[in-house]
Length: 196
Image 1: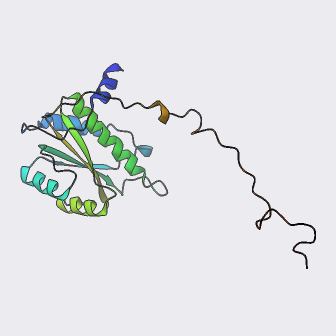
Image 2 (image 1 turned 90 degrees about the horizontal axis):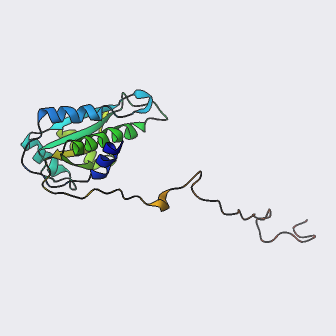
Image 3 (image 1 turned 45 degrees about the horizontal axis):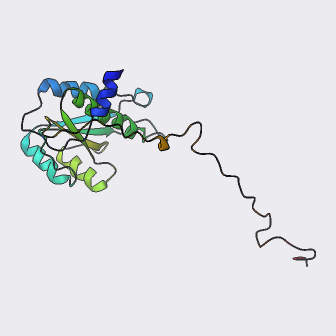
């Protein structure tokens, strides 16, 4: 229990990486961790595009204004709408793929790697740019990119716990409701008012 809590607190967004590549064994472990994530009705709507070719990484960076990091590995986490939970729960794919993304980040931290999550969905321009780059079919939507590599920076563990964000049983005690007057035009009618 304490090991996973320590990994959760050590997971930080790392944006500077060495040139050392991520090994095939490490990539396999990251993908296994991703696919161990929970999903609605076990639909597992995820697809993963692994990019470790430098030219393809350069092209990806060029399409992501907030994702121009020099990591030697990028994993594009995508949702397959043909496997997504049916309507009205279709957008559960976002929860499912986000859980897979978080597992990648935590697994990377546990292996001594650095990682950062760069969002794509729901920004249409980014969705189209990344979909085109990695040749996604129309029914597959990129949620985000996990950049992964050996860290060239260190950050201290943190929790960011804030007790004011915790609510027990309900969000907040309800304020007493003000009763609205039954007559919508002022305080009400006096005798004889409004009669023909």
